[in-house]
Amino acid sequence: MIAEQPLNHTDSRACVGLPFDWTPTIRGQLLAGYSYGVVPGNFLGGWLSMRYGPRRAILWTSVLAAIISLVSPFIAQCHWGLLMFSRVIIGLTGGAMFPSCHTMVAKWSHPNERARMIWSLLGGTFGTILTYPMIAGIAETMNWESGWYIPSLLMIIWTIVWALVAYDSPVEHPGISDEERDYILTGQAGIVRTEKPRWKQTPIKQILSSVPFLSLVVCHFGNLFLLFFYQNSLMLYLTKALGFELTKGGAAAGAPWGGRMLFGFFFSWAGDTIKRKKIISITLLRKLATIFSHFIPGIFLILVGYVGCDFVLANVFLFFALGFNGAALISNLSNNQDLAPNFAGFLYGIMNTIGSTSGMIIPPMVEEIAGKFGNPVDRWQILFWIGAGVSIGSMVVFLFGGSGNIQKWNELIPLEDPKENVEAGQTKMEPIGTAQT
Image 1 (tube, rainbow, N blue to C red):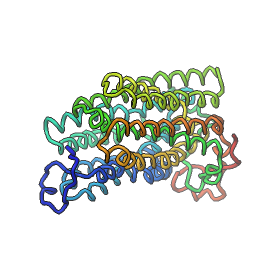
Image 2 (cartoon, rainbow, N blue to C red):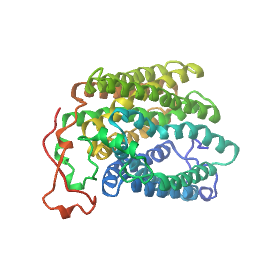
Image 3 (spheres, helix red, strand yellow):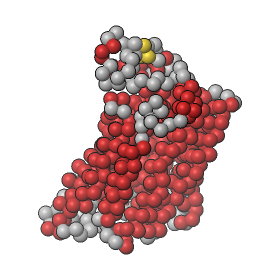
Image 4 (tube, one colour):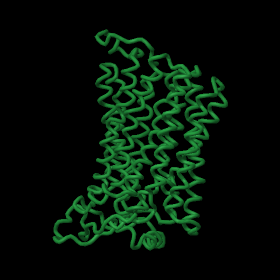
């Protein structure tokens, strides 16, 4: 669908639906466009989930993303700059998703079942598994425009279902049983507040000076660097460097994400079991988990670059690299819930804001190191070493500075003026204390 030679964008062919002859630089910028929006979108999502609640934050950003995706083929036919702008907006809406989801996890999960509920957020991974082969098949058998229309329509259907069944917390859900609600709220007693905190109650200074949280941010960056590398570059490696057909490469690119879901379920179950039985401390659990989520994937990533054009072996290594990364569910993806469940969504917004900058770095980096040279395997080996180095290096930082203890600034006290809590409609509270490491 994308040719190698540059196109004169004043040519009328650019607006008649023909395949696009974009240069490697333009391709890299279009792929990075989503991340340009995701970076501020994550911070926005953390704020929206506190201000309006996660249900509404997810609903309206999803509606906007679906509409823009639906009209993207028309935008692309006019100018790549307009398409890039639309990708930035979609990234902005996508960035709001996970911080809002983490706010819901904090409100809806029993502490001993939290990792398995976070596993449910891998629905995005399930979507990736379906999307790679589906889009490849649609592009080859129908047309590339339908590769935008069909997912957009599916997303609109999903938003309708979300609007009907989702609620911010067990307290607000009209259909939950008393037994289930009491089970969740009893487990959260003394840890998670039922009221929604206001912006004034957010302990910004304590958060930004917390060594455990800053170590978590670095660890999360390494994890997202690995994931964005796969998401933005894996198809290119399989089709351009190894020379596989688009449909074959699409199916192969989706398989490692299936491994991540499969391994992730096991790791989340194991993590919750270890936590419930108190076999080891939560801090030690999180740090040991990074060996599986960061170190082992880094090693497999290096090995991928040295298998030549062996399709089977390359995909076995890719499968295990992303599969073991499923342990991130009990390392960096759970640690914000450990540190401050009352501000879990906001913390995740900061983590993802910084971590998502990797998505801005990787596509241009891939084009500069490998794309402009024709994607030879030896150039991709350099990229695999870089990805492994970032993943393993971030793990080392977390091993020294990470913690699984609840921080003192998770606690709240009443605000002086009870009328100030118009946003949350609850008793006014504000953060106290300093970080516990």
